[in-house]
Length: 266
Ligand code: ADP
Ligand code: MG
Picture 1: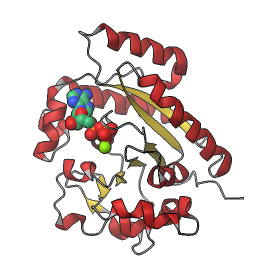
Picture 2: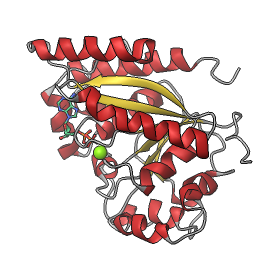
Picture 3: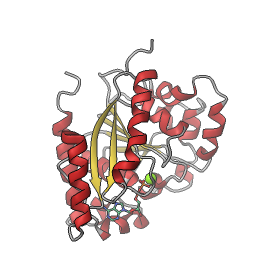
C-alpha cells in the first residue's frame, strides 16, 4: 500500500471543481495572498493549461518557461520550478501551454495518477500550505492533484445548478480515496460570487449548507467587480484594492481556514 502523504510538511490542498468559471483560480490567488500576509509560506501549483493563476500573479512568459509540465514529466525537480511571485512568502510553480499535452502524454505513462505526488515528495520543506489550482475538468491533471493532496477545497458559484454539478466531483473524490489516497477529505466548500440582491444566491447557499453542513465555510465571497478587474493588472485583488469587499472576504476566508486547519494533524 501507498504510504500516507507526510503530515510533517505543509498541508496540500487541491482547489477543484470540474466546472469552469466558479472561482477556483481567483480563490487560489487571493487565499494564497491573504495567507502569505499572515507570514505563512505558501506555494501555488498552477495545474491548469490555461495558466490563469500564473498570469493573474503577473508572471511573464519567460518566468513560465519552466513549469508544472516538466515537473509532472519528471524532467525538473519541483523545488527548481518554484518561482517567486513577487509577493512576500508566496511562490508559484507556473503553467505553460505545454501542460495541455500532458493529459494525453500521461495516459501511456506508468503511475500516471501519481506523477504530481511523486514529484512533490521531499520538495516542500519550509512551506506551510500548498494550493493546487486545478483545471475545469476531472481528467488526469485533476486526478493528479487529488492524489497528491491532503484535502480538497471546492469553490461553488451561487447559481441554480451548483449542487448538481458537485455530485460528480464528490463521487470522484470518493473513488480517489478508495483507490489511491485513503485520507483524502473535503477541506471545505466556499460559496463564491454571492449576490446579495439576488434571492437565488440565498436559496443556493441554504441548499448547499443543508447538504454539506459544517463543511461549508461561513465566509462567503461576494460578487465584486474589483475581483474581476485585478487579474488584468497581474495582481491579486488584495494588492489591487485592499479595502474592497472582495479583498476583505478573502482575508476573512484565510482567517477561517487557519482556524479550521488548527490541529488537523494532531
Ligand atoms: P475558475 O478558475 O473556476 O475557472 P475564475 O477564478 O477564473 O474561475 O473566475 C472566473 C471569472 O470570474 C474570472 O473572470 C474572475 O475574475 C471572475 N470572478 C471570480 N470570482 C469573482 C467574484 N467574487 N466577483 C466577480 N468576479 C469574479
Ligand atoms: Mg481557473
